[in-house]
Amino acid sequence: MDKLVIEGGIPLEGEVTISGAKNATLPLMAAALLAAGKHTFENAPKLRDIRTMQKLLTHMGAACEHNDLLHIDTSDIHTLEAPYDLVKTMRASVLVLGPMLARYQRARVSLPGGCAIGARPIDLHLMGLERMGVEVELQHGYVLARANRLKGASISFDQVTVTGTENLMMAAALADGITTLKNAAREPEVVALAEYLRLMGARIEGDGTDVITIEGVEELSPGRIRVIPDRIEAGTYLVAAGITGGRLKLNACQPTHLEAVIRKLEAAGLSITPEQDSLLVSSNGPLQSVDVKTSPYPAFPTDMQAQFMSLMTLGNGVSVIIEQIFENRFMHVLELKRLGADIELDGRTAVVRGVKKLSGAPVMATDLRASACLVLGALAAEGITEVNRIYHLDRGYEAMEKKLAAVGARIRREKE
Ligand code: UD1
Image (cartoon, rainbow, N blue to C red; front, side, top):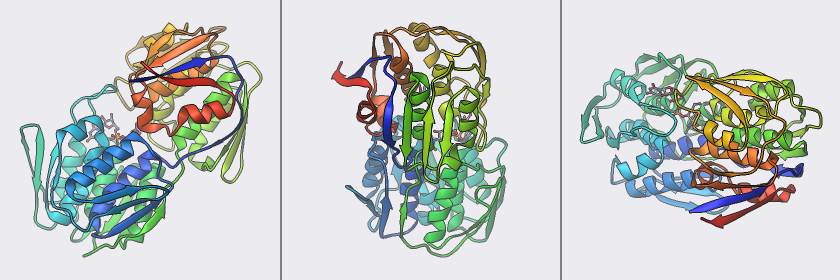
């Protein structure tokens, strides 16, 4: 297993190119199951989660190739199953459920089980599919689902779910009649999926709002699309500039997807200038402590909570951080304390009292965004920090140590 060794205290300066979004690529890959033939994605990031989805699609009979472009050929799908081994390493594997049912009327998908950041059930995905006429049975840890052609339905989510919205949008694209998704997720990744589905011939309206209407069609055809920039990766590098008192230009990003994050970082004292597809960020004053609450898009994303907490450990006062999406997404708190942070936890609330400095120590990454937050803490800490178990980081950040080293960070990867 690899670890990162980071010597902190160097202000980062230079340019970073933001990669394509992992969370936009995964649903596009699943959507390839909706139409036989060769699908092509530009700007897909080279990440472990993307390889896991490739493995899953290959297991089902697809041919995948990822060089400059990501090609997925779904001409020969023979196995309608997402096995436990793959689903347990990546929950987003459940995204194949909707497309499988829409196109092949049956599916066998392992239940994801718990993960480090909370229970994360898929009951809302299943509720929606049942409304569309799918019979669902749970057997030996698997969801067995079958249907005749899916029927359009009116589906109201009692909680906003991103992959739930994506799964049902894909299922509805080939259903008989009209489906309405209410209290749907408005994330840019949902809009990006809707755009690809429309390109394939689907009839979808309202994506980007909380009511999405899908009129099912008989058939879809494969296409080619560019993956949107990763807003969470961009947000992470904004914090990297802020926490080191540096100055960065982030290229190939989409500033409009980051409005809530930018507002909070500006309140914390960073200076941020959005341009059409880049962001200039710098920080030289003291960091202000500000409060944050995570909520579905367009509010502050849960996927930036841990990184923002790193920044707040060096604030000039007290910051209250409330996690409203996942019940157990504070695994990074104990590790940040090892770097000298002063944080008190009470349920879904973390009270962060700013300290003058962090000091390097060995720490352990527990999940994807927690890993990023430890790297950020390490970049600011005095002395050397070892971030262990960084395989989580490799799931979601393309070439992070290379990108950081290129802007001056002293960082290297070593075998544990
Ligand atoms: C997606 C993102 C993840 C992000 C999360 C929230 C992908 C691949 N992953 O995950 O990075 O952190 O959105 O922005 O896009 N819930 C239920 N029942 C369900 C589904 C969800 O109770 O059937 C709950 C979850 O436990 C959680 C909340 O709803 O508390 C939101 O989860 P959801 O939006 O579904 O997260 P994911 O789509 O898995």
